[in-house]
Every structure is written in C-alpha cells, then in structure tokens.
Length: 138
Image (cartoon, rainbow, N blue to C red; front, side, top):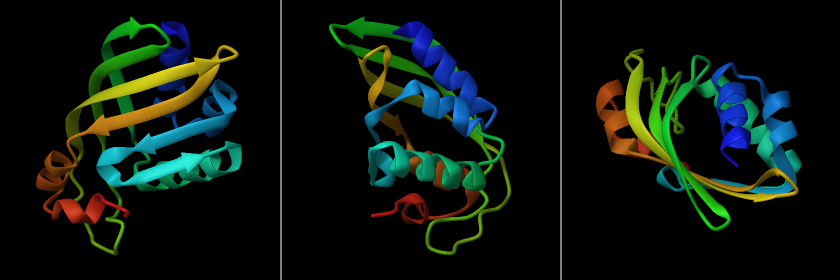
C-alpha cells in the first residue's frame, strides 16, 4: 500500500495525470471534503485531475509518514502549490501556499479504490488573501 501511495504522490507532484490514472482503480472514488468535492469513476477523476493541474500547476506533496489499519492507509505530510484562481472567479495574491495534509486510501486489485484528501482550506485562503469560500466548490 505504501509503495502505491508513494507512486501516486510522485505522479501528482509532477502533474502526470496519465501516471496517476494508472494507479487509480477504474471504479475509484476521489473526494476532497474541505473543498466539497467527490468524483467517481475513471472519466470523472481524470477530468478532476486535469482541472487541478490547471488550478495548481506547481503542486507538490511531501509525505512524511504513513500508517495502515486493515485495508486503510493514512498518509500525512505537506502540500505546496500556487492557486491560479478561486472557484468562483476570485483572484488570489499569487503566493505559494504550504499546509499540512492527511490522506486516507483504500485499495482494490493493487490500485487506489478510494482516496479522501484532507487539508486546512482556511489556511490556504489566509495565505492567498481570499475567503475560504473561494476554494469550496459546493
């Protein structure tokens, strides 16, 4: 599990959507509760990753720890990125943000079947000079 997640983190950190999609199971669910998003299935997740690369073209994640409990793996570390826009037309200040992250994963057929990506969206907003609602889609 840890190797699969490390490969996914590496793919996302170089904005390689194709490599990331090879790690996600075709029936995967990808959710980011702080942003109010949930994507199901290969097509939906691919489009979400493509939009995320446009939103944060310099995105990088550094995982510093991982722990497993049964079929769930929790990874934690730091994400850094420069938001290009808010989700309702807002313009951020152009600064790169850095916030802690924890990500929960489940697996099927040696691929990620479920991912829940969690971070402090209010900290991102503060660092970019916007209201937290700028980064919440729902």
